[in-house]
Image (cartoon, rainbow, N blue to C red):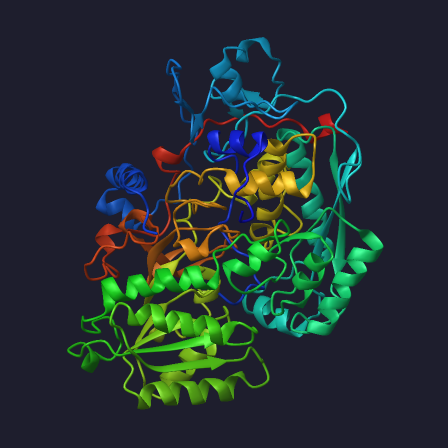
Length: 622
């Protein structure tokens, strides 16, 4: 039997409860540079969700967002359906499907399950629970259900790194002066230090342990700074050995993603990690079960979505969005540029080219580059010259977030103005990085993004929930969006795993919860056998599943991800509608149409709003 197929009572109840995790994957880890048709029910769900958001958008609000303050309090109706057999109980935000014949593991009881059993009113859920909705009292639509406060014996040392009181977690971070990381972060003036990150992580842990059930245990965090550069496999492997032999944690968060050595060594020693640099195929993840997990979609998953988008929406049509008007009457000629430092980059590109061929799309030039700041200018000169000589009208770009700055400047220097198609690039789809690119070139940029459509500052996001809880700005305010997903995922799964904490039980829950609710302000994620990907990509050990279409509006003024106001913002097509594999329409792209696009919601869309709650004081936990 394949990993994850065997169903325990723990995994079955997790699936019946639906999305036990709804984390913020509004940004992905900055160092991750490399990058089954859905059922009718899923398609209908997507259509209704998108329609709900689109209906409330007028042409005016999709183009401009007021800077005035808005109220976020929204009344949430509670609807309870009589239970017969299997019943869907709607509790505020996401819905949870419950099987009344399923038994929870001992000591594990969610509000939806208790409500179905008719005993919810007999339980003291504590001040962290909103018993009107059955969800934790966090002002966020994608919050998890309440879990019954645990009392009794949690089993003590149930696994490595676990005691009756603690769960040992390691967070890996690069050196403050790592030149490769500096190449990336200096471009956006991110000056958060490792000390800032450690402080913010510990305070995030305090927040999650206030609202999520941990069964008597608290995370004991140890931050490990890389002994070498993020591209160095030797030092990465040495870091993994040191973590295993000197710390022996339950789990590791993060890693040097330019090499697979760190993750390979950890998992070979039986230590689980999330986004620790594991590359390769779905089979590679299955081989390391239950120890390898990722927050982002895999390179192969991204390539399938990009190929479908290009094949259905771009191929066979003229390059009307190129900066060179002579290309407007020419059918698109595609070239691709991709970051090739990873051991698996060439193989991933081959799979991408194969996927394009299935739609009849030919790539006349496919060029890799290495992320080397010292040679980037020379690299850019050669790449642009090759693309121009090949007559490429449309460049599919799968890049790190800084290299497009050099590519676009060089393209202008060579008087070459193609379409720039954002194709699986990490953080290229953020406003803060896009503003560093040649704006005459980037005015012709459009493509795909896994990021959700943003909401005005103060409405949603990791920064706002941190400040809501702690009453102060995070020390790592520039980085919190890429570190918060680790504890968000971990505590969501921990709450559903129960007191018998082992990595096998934790993985059972990961692989069997239903996909998270779909929206427009946040991606939907799933693991395991969701049916969202072809059979050869399941079980799925990656997170994000859906994607949205964007285009660069060089004239739109607004605040970027660091809160800096200025010109240049990504617009999200069709009100931020998101697509799973198989859902792209066979029609020309709707990019560069301000009438159907939104760059930022003034307030959270009604379909994704939540009630407002006063925070529980952090001092209450001390």
